[in-house]
Length: 256
Image (tube, rainbow, N blue to C red; front, top):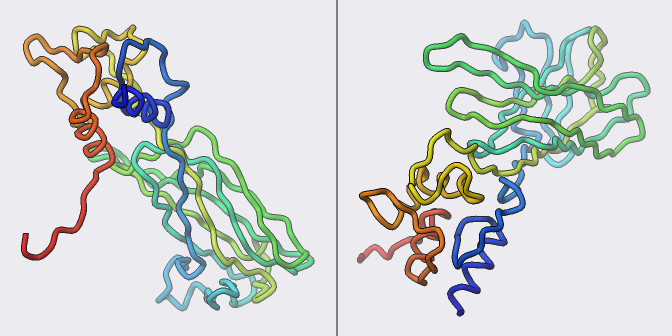
């Protein structure tokens, strides 16, 4: 009974384990949520060693990053966005300071992709303006239908510290930090079933296939391939599922 209770709790939390004879599918193909923090000092100009760009990003620790430069300099800052493979990007958050009565901070989230045998592309996933003038501010912008593909793409946040065609405003606009919130997702189901007892119409088909293709389980029988979805789960099986699914490990003493 304890084993079934534990397995049921894990299923409710993330859809990783399956036990008993329940046929109710999890509520949705999402699992853990998380976020990636990007500090202001990670921002870089397009080419920091090229004086011809006409501006300098000035990092001031907790006070934030600002831009100084020649008249009408672009004042662009770039930073990489790290997120897990297959995660859904959901929300960009920015903490900053803006006391400029005229200029504003502009942003763009960009995907730069190049498949192994394809053509390189650069796509703006979301862009906009944080219209502020009262000093310290927090702002957020949502993204839609952006699934991370780290195999082919890199993701970047681009900030413009002044309005296009206008002069840099220096300390009047500063960025202290940013965050990208994301949700892990279970991969879409394949077209064909791996196990004879978990067909494509089974309520847990997508999740069983995700376990198999992630190397977490090989099923309960090799020939023919079966998963035995209605068999109870032992504590040993639960340990294997969790350890593989979560990538559990620990530092061993040097003597071992």
